[in-house]
Length: 159
Image 1: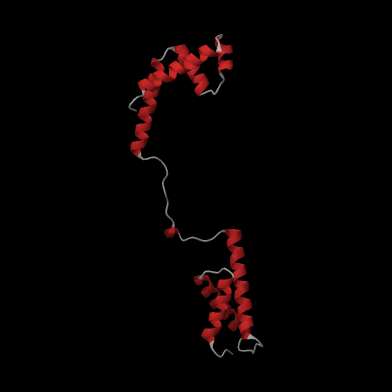
Image 2: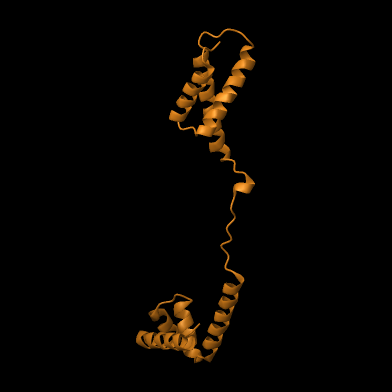
């Protein structure tokens, strides 16, 4: 059927590589095409066996591409690296300690300053809105926010 089977396989593999197949996939597609051709023809003569083999290998490559696009590429589980992005135990403990310290600092702050600071920083409310609620001017709201921020910065220093 073929004069030089190795050369034919090499040419078919080159066609597949030019169409974007990896060297490994190209080898697999050529082998699968050869198996299909020998099973289907069962010794019958083909006018152009190299063209038949090439077309079959290209069709197999197209089918494989469609399957990957529809179902995603397969990855062996042992090839995966699972990265844990959660903070470590030490970082979690430090974070909890910082939060405890923050709450202690907020409790030490004068009540009105704390309420205004939290309304602005946590509640994301404007000075004008807070001023209307508390019956004070926007500049007084700003002074409470500045005072609360300074107190927190001082008390939280080193944390």
